[in-house]
Length: 412
Image (cartoon, rainbow, N blue to C red; front, top):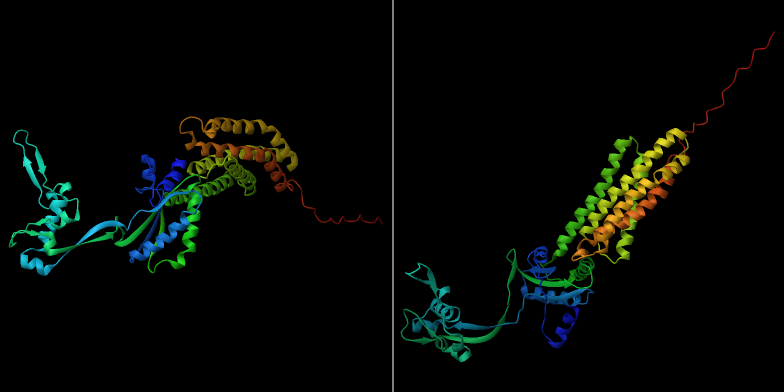
């Protein structure tokens, strides 16, 4: 596919090629658009919008990872302008409506003007009857000029050339509007790069050219980019909300503000492991990856609670925070390791992307594996250290001021 994308423009210069999404999932995610990136230039001045869109298109094509960038609307659609001379038409008894109906019947069929149906008496089915001039009889401009015009009030048989002038011209092949405003659309796809990086580069181009856009025009980036941004915003909000909710829930259970802080110190390590795993495997950040991050936070928090709850019990028993932390790390080593390994081994096939379509959910498995590896190391080493530092003054009584002992009374 990549070779075909590069070969077609070289073999056919001056032409644009695009590869439309073939599966229904991509079409739904594109919201009906033929490409995942949909850049719209909306404004009242269509010609100025076309010029501005062409300027943006030249810069967008230079963005790494952009493929099939093009303006969907074309202003080079060849047309014939039929300019009816009303004075000559009036003398001939022909109106604009008669000219239009005759042209429509000959070029598009009578069904556009006067639909006619024939009822088959044998089966009771109605069949449409369409009358139209054969296309091979209207294949030249001369035959179009000699097209007969049928009018009830005509003084005689009239031809189109006798009452109208025909000129060659160009027009817009596709007319798009948004809220009654004219709109120019730039479509683009991604190849070899993730959608987020490409969209970020395109947004930089839009911001850099904002000062030169036509007066009153708007530039909006839609398509899968908007869906991706809304999904990421919702999942990131859910991730942060989950961390905050976990913190306050542990505060209620432990009746302490310091213990939840010690427990959630394992979560930054989990985030670091997620970032490292995605970077090492060249996996882009996606909705499944964020879903796996939320799963990893839950498992890491549960293991951290397992260690800290035991450490608090030992702290009350021994009275020494360092000894309690060492005891908790030693005793809870196997339960924490078994829980993490069970999750990592279970996610390994998904992380490897085995089987058909395995790459679709591979990011989720890789996120969970990387996050749990780093989180487990932090839970067994870093979290006990933080616990011992936070509770280092536990059991120590503040030094009291020296009490004055009464001197024994002198014997007399």
